[in-house]
Length: 359
Ligand code: NAD
Image (cartoon, rainbow, N blue to C red; front, top):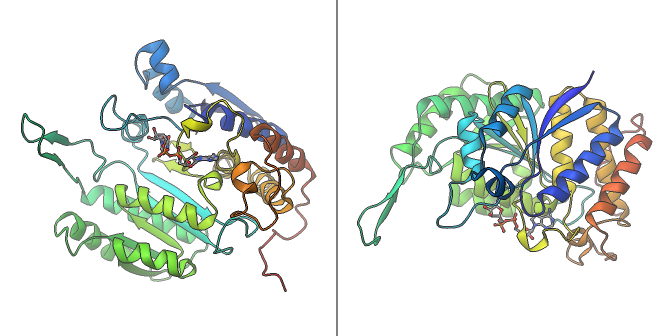
């Protein structure tokens, strides 16, 4: 059976890393028919808007999309395409797994966490204004609703159950934010009582940052609000090996968009240097969503083997901090070719590779 999937190449390194993922997708043998649409800078140049309606239509039609990163101007310019996309399509759950691969590039080689972030409201609601004409004061409204909090907390517990994970931690700042924080906390307490099989607890955001850096292995699934989740998922990406290897997914009731945690890394745009792994692992999550578990597993293991071998890896994975055996960096396209070459050769009869300490 063929699948029609929306593909948004995006800005900066986006076209290179999405092309890499497309190539790996082909190697799986799954029939993926790409409906390529532009958002971001290319769309502005052609349609004078960063998010043409045709992009939303394509995702609504196909129900699944693979997306590259999109640049957002800082402190002015157009509204974030990423935030608008999530709100327009009601992609309320941002799921960002932080999995260390082959023990490389991390002080925590066994990291295996998932950040579940509410993606439609909170401090990213877009409700903000200058208080005075001189622009000496400004306000951003933190919109938290019972509906969205209930939906994201249930999503986190259901995901934990599906993936046989045993522990969900809510992260908030209810001691200071006594309305918004307390509402999210209260909903978490109500919903967690419905899942007695899963351990639940809470952490204040500041403490959580410290806890994660000291002992990430004590956490499993983390559920939180929009801005806190955005920050925590980058922190967790760092624990697992960096932005170059951190995939992500956005889920609505009917639609799903897969995209890496990283941004458009403009300084590497067009140089064929960026690490394609985060986008390739986003494709892995997409394949799992489509029910193509075997193809997804091949992609995951091909990435693992490529990183473990340290022969064909991009600059970020070749640096001394990443590996104790630095190697000359390969190009983005070379790494994609190596992963694609490995995909059909993976022996799924063998147990999934696990990192083990050197004896
Ligand atoms: P960034 O993720 O683009 O870059 C942060 C650092 O990580 C840079 O040093 C970059 O070179 C490096 N990096 C990122 N991805 C890499 C990869 N695949 N391989 C190797 N190195 C990589 O974050 P930023 O610089 O804060 O943001 C740049 C732009 O991206 C901004 O306009 C921002 O708004 C946008 N952004 C978009 C998304 C998205 O589309 N979902 C997410 C985050 C940031």
